[in-house]
Length: 130
Image 1 (cartoon, rainbow, N blue to C red):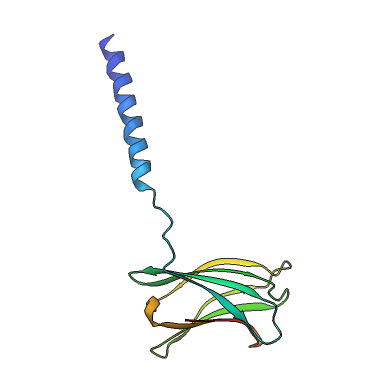
Image 2: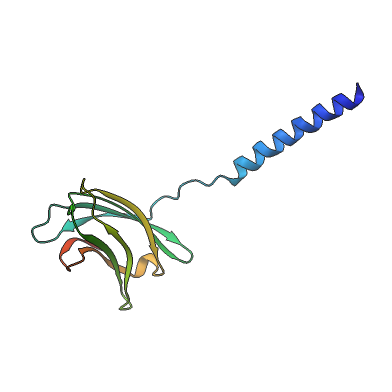
């Protein structure tokens, strides 16, 4: 019947519209503007990679680390050329000594001079100089 055909057509159009909307809503993972390996601190066996993604509001940091301390708390600090020191993340050490996290700061990428991973007692685990 004509009514049934109209319902099927409307459902098909709605499905196509939903599929198009879903595809338009997808965002691709932004490419890192810079990626650096951090140097381990004195006595540390840490292997840390920091990827920086430029944002209009500041910088996103994607951090992956292994060989980190397996007990205590860890903190990630960003130091910029304007003299601003910002703690951007804290977490409890993992039994595996690994971490993968994403964090951010208000500093623009060009202003970031150093990223430092430290323990709660202040021991430097890794430093990434820009």
